[in-house]
Length: 120
Picture 1 (cartoon, helix red, strand yellow):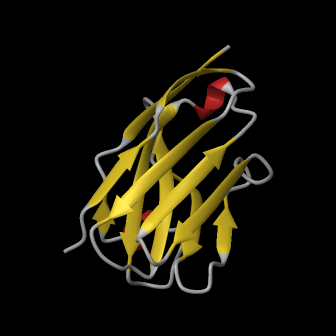
Picture 2 (cartoon, helix red, strand yellow):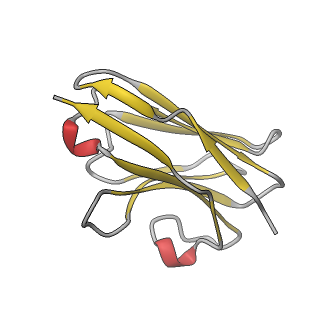
């Protein structure tokens, strides 16, 4: 069993930045960030293979967001720059021992989520 705890959400103006952090209670193979806006399905944002560090991004995140993992400490971070109102959502940290990165159903463990609100 792996427990995840996110932090770093909040309210920011469009064009601003936020850094999300997620602490895992133990080592995992893949960690990712997903988000869910009201009335929408949960969607993949970014993922990282903790050993090796390969990263993957949704098109909406590429070039603005950066995911990084600290394999020694079991932490994953999401640096979000140039935020837009459409980035407003609850952001979830997820962890998996399976190789898939982009598919929510492949992740076994989920955090409680942290709210990110971007005002225009």
